[in-house]
Every structure is written in structure tokens, then in C-alpha cells.
Image: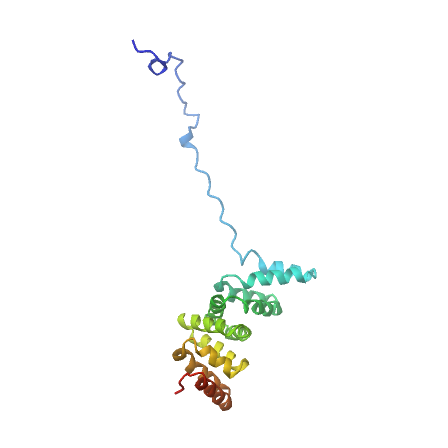
Length: 213
């Protein structure tokens, strides 16, 4: 006869009591209610917190918040601009734009595109004017990114600010990245400023070996 624990039959025990209708079973228990969705809000009450910091004179912490917000995803910026304006914090929005002007070229382009698409051209152009203080190679990268995204107005605004604030030689150096794309746009921007600026840029382009139509 086989021996071992797996061959033993369990001794009969008392029968399990039958469930009565008054005793709810596990299957009859109602399903737990779903967890409530997190409350929606503009970045967790950013503006309210900023107002509180300003009221308490904690300007350093307020500035740190603005620096952090400058790096938010670009689509969030137009709504934040409107909210800060309604709260009387236009100066803080200007500070945020100043910080955003130092973003990497692709993110600068994304921020400008988002503001332009939302109809905030003045904010967009102000951001781009501040952004041309960076190295020419980074300005070129941002302009190309704007052009690739179909934001021709913003790309032209960036190049216009560059021509206005930098030398003709620097503009010619920027055009070397892609002469066929940059040269006509830079010349158009220079012509919108003055005939003298257009003439100086055309000369600088020829010296750099870039043909001018």
C-alpha cells in the first residue's frame, strides 16, 4: 500500500455551515468606489503661491519659482501669461520671459512658437529679442527650428532682432550655416531697418563668400 503524506486521506471533519440569506457573501460586497481624480488647477496654484510670497516679501523664493516656471512645457506658457496678467503680476511675467530667453535653442523656439500661436506676438517678440544675446550658432539653431515648425513669422522676428542688435559681420557669420535659407531672410530684415543696414549686410555677405541677389 502506498505510504506518504500525499496518499493520506484527510479525516472527515464537521460539515461547513450553510450560508444563510442574512449573511452577505464576499461576492455580494459592493465594489470599492474609484479614487477621486486629483483636483485640476493651473500647476497646483502657482499664481496663488506667487502672490503669497510677494505679500510676505519673500522675493528670492518668488524669483526661484519664476525660474522654474520658465522651463515648463511651452504650451503652458500662454495660459500662465494670461493668469499672471489677471493677478496683477505683469512684472513677474516679464521676469519669467527674461529667464526663458536663456533656454536651449530648441526650447526657446518652442516657447516662442507657443506664444505666437496663442496670439501673444508682443510677448513672443520680446522673448526673441532677449534671446539674440546668445552665441550666433544658437540663434541660427533656434531660427531653423522655428522655420521647420512652420513659424515663419517668429523665425523672421528672431532674425530681425539679430540684425538690429548684432553687427553685419556677425549676421554674415550666422548665414554661413545655410546661406540659401538665411541670406535672403537676413537681408529682408536688414532692409526693414534701413537702406544703410541692408547695404552693410550685403557687403558683409559678399566678403564672407555668400552670393547676394
